[in-house]
Length: 59
Image (cartoon, rainbow, N blue to C red; front, side):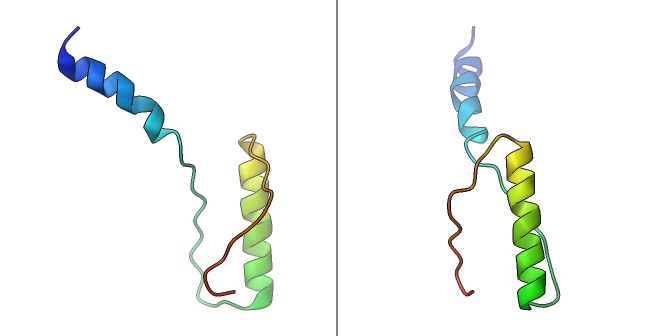
């Protein structure tokens, strides 16, 4: 096995460490944010991830 193959295999798990949900919206109204957050929680749940808390930058 080449050194490049070994590095690629060692790096592969790091790719799977982060799973991101993204939606783009034209507004930041309460209803929009609430609906998007509920969809995100459902999406993470469908991937076996339990959301325990949400941290926002501006809300």
